Image (tube, rainbow, N blue to C red; front, side, top):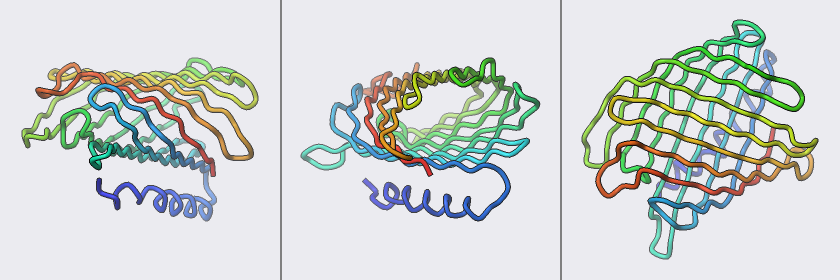
Length: 237
């Protein structure tokens, strides 16, 4: 594993949070996660996971940046790595609707490719939002570029669809369900993430999540479906 790439998540988050503290415009929020992961599918080993998210909301915009790193090791050393970075901006058309633009970078040795770039623009709408429930969805055209481990390349147009459900179970517990499907002529990527977050004390919380990611087409000797069961500590700045 490249230790430097994995370890830069924490200072990156701290730097961004400090910057947010000196910028007066908008509402800033930062979260950092760290925990243990049990994976299934292409690998069945114990892993370490780190994740950082920073968002800024103004009267007209909602911006968010996410960085995620996964390191898998066994008695022989590092066996797999996954890195993800994403940026997204939403322009509010009113109380319910928005336009979005997003770009993701993924380096996933689990899925048999060296890296993958995805971009999309489109329309979203919040169908329900109150103290208990949140339901929103988005759809738009996009593109995807993939470099496989054998150094071959693939580029395709995509259709991005995604939906999010939030349920405030109690004052201290929240359930979230995120589902995205990116349809492509060569490959369709489906990802589902279910999570329960419970407050421990102050800004510290415990999060349990289960994710399933499926690729319709994969390189030889690579499974189409990967799963992750994650337990992390979450700190909100």
